Image 1 (cartoon, helix red, strand yellow):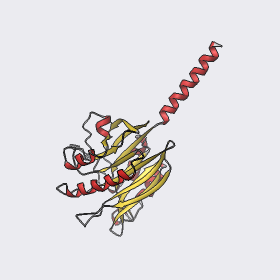
Image 2 (cartoon, helix red, strand yellow):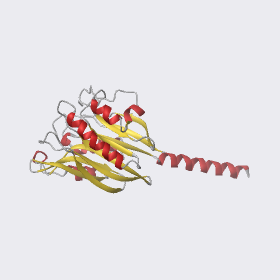
Image 3 (cartoon, one colour):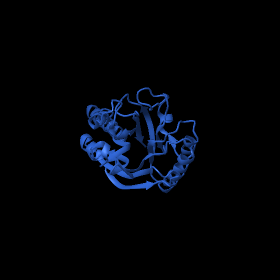
Image 4 (cartoon, helix red, strand yellow):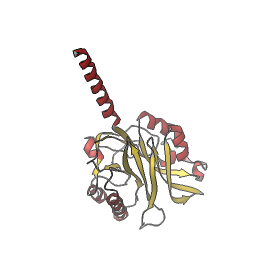
Length: 258
């Protein structure tokens, strides 16, 4: 009887451990510079290998081409999806060199909804946007946003973008939320302070390292972020992989579902 009880207890513990492990997932945010690395080669298999190595479940990509002359008219999202075995979602923010240019999301989870917001821009020569998907993550809905905000001096444009992101957060407050992207601003900026007023900086919750991701050869600043509503999902680990596959390095965060 005691032996059967111990076997039963062991099975319960094993199932509990497996269930706990299934409640974690990894997110990567990565400005891929249209797939061009520091060696000036467009090498998507190199990026795909990095995604596989880091075991990313959701990937937010910025600076993605589709049908653009400089990348030979290729559909980078479709190629990356095939190389990684993930589902790819692309959003066009503006037409460029005969094609489209914007953000993309790769995911191992089912995509329930998708939409794209074009920001109200102060500078009109490069439209920016926020690609949004609702995912089924281990049976729970997750609102996930991929964005790339303006790079020019001054925070006016970026703060305007953050204001629109705040509206998206309010509209989806009932769901766990992750917003990823290249914010072209450091942690001491007004842009960071505005984002911190609506969501939590996942890096600060999960790591004590600097988190520098740009430039890729000698990173000296943190401008790539993952923002989270951590009441329902908790960042448990964060790191920056060392790679020269783009002019940025990716930022990885592992999350735990409560």
